[in-house]
Image 1 (cartoon, one colour):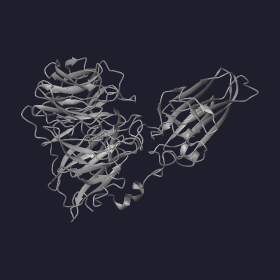
Image 2: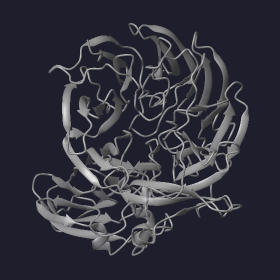
Image 3: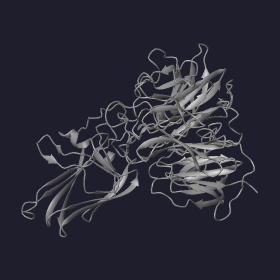
Length: 628
């Protein structure tokens, strides 16, 4: 069947009609005026000098956060944590001087290390008002003139929203008289508020696990039959988070350490038996060969170690016992990543009585924050001795190599339905829809009442860490995520009864976009393919998903576009200017951002009125990219 035709008429993405306060080259909301990361501006430098474009001004003292600025009406607007408060700020577009700063309340402390510095929401400017979402779910409407709070709601207190693992990161959508945001609660997955008053217009309930609301089975996702095997649920789907076979102590295998490079423990010299406890518990691993690493125990090498293969399946216990001799007062284990991250559940160091008479057995439960007692009454120490990596509590199913598991969006309690993406608005066959990538699926909601119209699951990863804003272009809706998932394009159709289906056109694991966003231009999809372990820019044919090229010279990062050039900001801070091309990477300049902080460079670049804005936590740099 011709995928370009089906009698489907798509409208352009219909965004807010911004008031006269914004100019044509402003960037008044997340991903720009059209919420697609593409500026309408012309007359910019097509190529940069060797040192990069000149700095117009710089400002320090913003406070922490990954909030990229909105630019409108001669001002820049953003969010930060500063002096223990979560604030919204306005700067002069001319020189970066602060115009006003308004605290929303106390800063929200985050329990995970990544992006803990502050909020990531880009304010949405509409007329003489602006709208923000704080990390803890504060939704506020402020005056752009003086920062006065005009109204405020709470996604958690007012709607039963559940805080995601990395807190709320969404940038709200203004559409007509409505403000759209995602509490992620059972009774309010997405809500529409009156933008003037903050009053609730509608709430959308969290869909059931089958992929549609319990009271409306017409709404569905269809997948081409030829992809049945690829679309089959993973072998670990539906497994109990506490079920570990092959052991009398399943609790020993819940928490873990992952991504570590080494482990060491001081012990008296002598002979020992080192026991390493493994089980594959990460939902994203569905078979052998998907997590392979090597480790060395006191000089004894174990190459190409595959937990799934050794344990013969998912959530099955496996113990590797290694006799060693200690001559320098230390047991040392090194880990080397091959495919995905090394991961381990526990380590036991048992002295052999004749050779280590003064030694005692040491038991360490990886990922555990407090001591643990097994079924035999033996005490296991909390996580310690590891070098690098992260600990996963596991009781909320973070385990298996990455944080943010299928059963837990935060530290305990139910999982949030909200992820970290932001909503877009589209028109399909005369009906307005809001499209959002939630913690479990890409969904389309009726703008009038929030009714779930359709759902597509594959673009969402099993961890619920879905960050990139969906794309609607050239008749397709596309969304992607990292952590072993990828990107899928769907086409909408309406049946005789009015039900809407989202039929998969293609799915590609070559676009595992983490949180840098994606852009479609001239039929090509550009975005970074890669997760925590890194990655690099990829270019796919947007209609087919075919990989056109990938290039490591363009490292993983976030994208924006203006005047025929892509602006790539890598996570390390390098900014690259790229000419779009179907045939390969065409670099037109690059430079390294000065005064880099130690945090990953996650704030997206912004281009407005001849300027490129690059935020690095406390620092905001303004570059002149206007052609002379």
